Length: 640
Image (cartoon, rainbow, N blue to C red):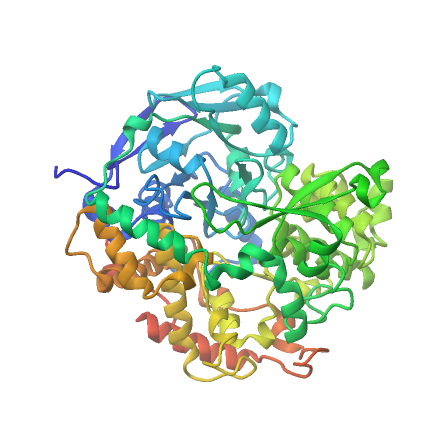
């Protein structure tokens, strides 16, 4: 085999059932075709996680959907951590990893990204990927040290601990006083209790959150993973001097105007902007503006709360904002001091979406999600659905037998205390209502009935992010078609809507290609893996990224055209994976509310989106992808 640069050429595969492990080689053509990160992880899902019975073409009924979702919690569903060729190079924002599995929330592909020091240690200790299969007979801590040999330790004493306490305890137990600290990925109570949107936390509270990877980890009886690799295992890069020069230049550009928003206010700056544009989803998408937006805006939080910036490993931008409430300066010491990593999606989901305008309540709710190990977007989404359902008088029709649930039956938008209580109930599957909401909005609406699915704001089972699709038509298409469900991170279609390129309030025939191109762009970012906040610092993203890939790997004939082909191939691989688990054309859609109710307020009041318009855009998207008119990718076009 030719010498490898940038990659290690193998994956470490651990079977928790037997306690055995092996190192599987990864073919070089697969590495090159899928790049790394989410691309390589998708390829590995096909390799390690394809169904025993291929569901291709099967029409799924609501009756057997839950059975298929539950199968994602079986020992056969692998949990895969994937690095990239850029990890370890010290290029700015490159210390990231992907988490891949099949989602117990959607039944389809689940791909998440997280960042910081764990990425480097995973690559050193495990190679290009860590594949975890089976189920431990006891609560487990998977420990991989500098020799690269996995050890399964009993973690019974960690059960019930928050993510932050779990990480601190594991680090203390495995500290040898002389070497670098171990890096930890873990779940909280939500993952232990198989909440379908449980997250995996690492490095002090960063989350791989969407689609429920924490529930898959919990289903394997795996509480934590602790990794400390050997720096001598770092793979060489092919052209180190060229790479060092480029890294210095990119770091300089990362501190320019293209990232100023993220460095100064962070993504919480979006609250004011989105509110002004009428695209801030409020009270379960019933409104697109929030009367208390100013109170929870990034500007107000910087002025009234104790705020500091935080950086991921090897990041020059520092977009994270750590916001503290209950400090002595605010005169509320009796409530205790609470800090939370705050970004737009968490702020939206636990603020405007549930009608809460008290910033202290929002910050405390975000912090509690991180401790429990809950995806904030899905948590806010399912609580918003519950609030509207309660307001319509449907929740009391449930068999609510205990006092806590009966109290929740009258919960209202804007009740910050109820939000925090519901997060507790969801994280521990406590009571009838907590257990109901822990299954996510789609399954909850199917159980409650009464037409409540009409305001269940989800796509493919994944709750909607903080962008109003009726006033962002290109993104509406992206949200409908992305393989993991309603997701603003696997498409950058909103960039077109926020530019002069299109009329964001209208529909035209260009949107299919724009959405496909934006999805390919995101696939390339997520496979290399660059941080999306760096995207505007590139002069020509495709040319520069291909050049960096050449510097790292030594594959000197790799060019921008090949990178584009790889990104499109990744889209095909994701779609093919979903097809094998029962995808159907009707899964590419938006919630009934988005297709049947015009916006009620804001500058876009009266604007709507019809199913006919959405279907026309989806047809254009399929054509741009080269898929069939039914939206299917043919197996012959897939390289596995």
